[in-house]
Image (cartoon, rainbow, N blue to C red; front, top):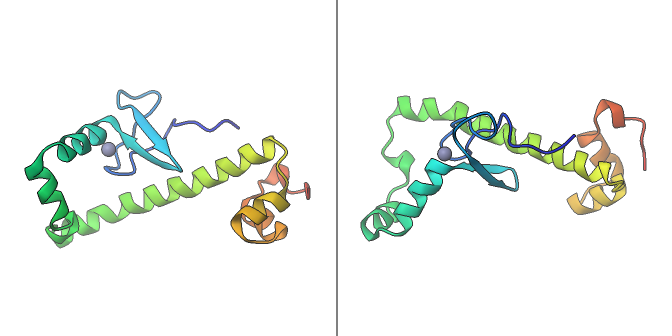
Length: 128
Ligand SMILES: [Zn+2]
């Protein structure tokens, strides 16, 4: 299974993007950022007033309770996307014949613990 940005959301604004949409995503380590957020962050970083404001209060400090509640599903969607990306990454490692022992060592857990956390049904019989 290839790792793809299809069906992913921006980890910063929650908008769906990537292939099949008109919103490009760029990502790393599971987090995805859309072109609009990149433009907004770039503008903030190059505008002293916006940068000073960004260094001040966090966005959630000025949100009312309804906005805070409405944001919770997006936070969980982003977290679940990252967890799915970790699974895809392990699938990539396994497709390159990286052993469960190596994956476990990287995570600081036993081979068995890595296997129990990440093995897919088709890989459930592999113990290498
Ligand atoms: Zn975004």
